[in-house]
Image (cartoon, rainbow, N blue to C red; front, side):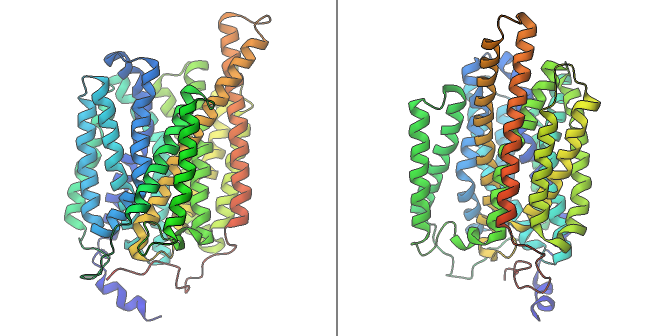
Length: 498
């Protein structure tokens, strides 16, 4: 009603909102690509520092544990202390941790640096998204801004593969960590210059941190990520895996109970019980679980079966990146305002499932143009719909004081989904390879047996991923509300902070 004309003049970010989007986009790209860029660098780092295969996973797991378990706390700290300050602290800390990792002379230092990256990433990521949420309140501009942010989330993994390949091949694996300084430092300077400080609470009104809830959810998410990571190397029947996953269930159930009883909950249930927001969080989790099959197993297929170099592998994924960007442009500006998130999220997941089914048709003799490229394009078109709609809906209508934890839920579901996908698909892949090799040892032998067994493993993983994404299409289709959010709806955009 009359709130729009009065809100604009007091919004300190209004005039610089597109510049702020650029700064936040740089930070988002750094966090997203860091997941895949280090994967590319890992074999070279292992050869340089001399750690064994059993310990190799900790370079990835240390980051995932710290990042995944601390995201909700990081989002809440931003709500309480002020997002500008937490955003800058996150950027500077991430840069320092990256420099430490790049200069690491031992395996232990590298793992510590990766854990510190996760800690500061858990401050940085939700602060960035919550700043975006409270900066763009006009529905049309909001869709454009979240379209850009969603595009970065969608293409960041592919950019990491390409950039990691180039840096590893032509410079050193260490530059896969040093490169973060070229993102973090300019973004921190820009944030210090253009962002305004302040919190969302008046004097004497700042709520206290929910300590019991924080302990429960941090411990629960840590146990969950650790349990799935341990299952990848030691199996689902390993006692540590079982204990970790059981403890995760207990602590996360306790967290939900605590949040319904405390005065100032870490994650107010109103944030996740909204159908569109809850459906968007679920979409991110399921997509991250299924998408792992693309980045991991298709990378293996391109390099080990088709003989691509790391740079060629990164270039091969560009088709998906271009498809994501094209799809997001149409979805965020044309389709989302007209049809709402349900057909874009559910339909996008269905397209992604089709893409996985296409990949499941690959053979050792397939080629890129007819075998891989069609699936990448279909995957990109589907992911564009999911990222554009889910990213915008995940924080739509959230009270400004809850924007940090609502934003943190996006990253949390992505991280947990990725951890589940890593463990589940890797385990099923290994089982399929072993089974095929055993059953065909008399018919095939040597390199041919190894190649066909690996191919069978890839195809199995792709089919499982297709099933996961198809399930996601069904569930989100039922959960998300039909139709677009009316522009006049009071929840169409977050109310600006004072």
